[in-house]
Image (cartoon, rainbow, N blue to C red; front, side, top):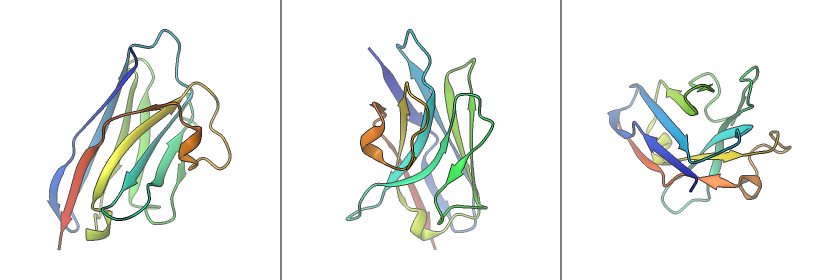
Length: 126
């Protein structure tokens, strides 16, 4: 059974930092494209960042560019999201997503991703 388990969420003041992790287990084949999405209360889920298997490039949503950094450890099947200069509008549930195919265009089309985690809450207070 494929599982994506996020961790690292919590509460932080504006301007602070958090690092999220997502561990993938139960796969007998590698996942190629991985991404982070988030959903704030009352809003649609939006793409935060995506990264291919080799990690040699990254894509970011406009609202997080320059503040967030996505990375992955292939040997540990783990995806990371380093978040800095956090703002209250970053408050949301953050989800890890993965697919066996190459990152598609548009990368933030959530319907394309096959596997999803349960999410981790990030709360930023002003």
